[in-house]
Image (cartoon, rainbow, N blue to C red):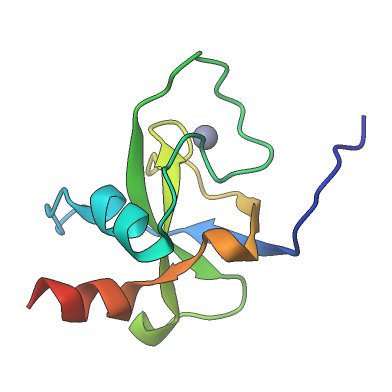
Length: 106
Ligand SMILES: [Zn+2]
């Protein structure tokens, strides 16, 4: 089934950033976007829990690998797991630049 996608999508990859124990990413994401994180940003999220706990996960756009190109998106624990090395399709509007949040933290 082809899902209707009302916004521009982009391919991203989860990055493992466990040493960063800051837990406020999801809150910062909501503050910066002015939206409530209500669903996992992965459009093909395999997690069928009714109300999955969301965290602000670090991702990169495919092909890029510098900290300047990191983004934070709402992810469920399945999609944010270290084991998830698959590309994910997400709405571009769901990406918040990591450096924006990093600068805010200071
Ligand atoms: Zn998910």
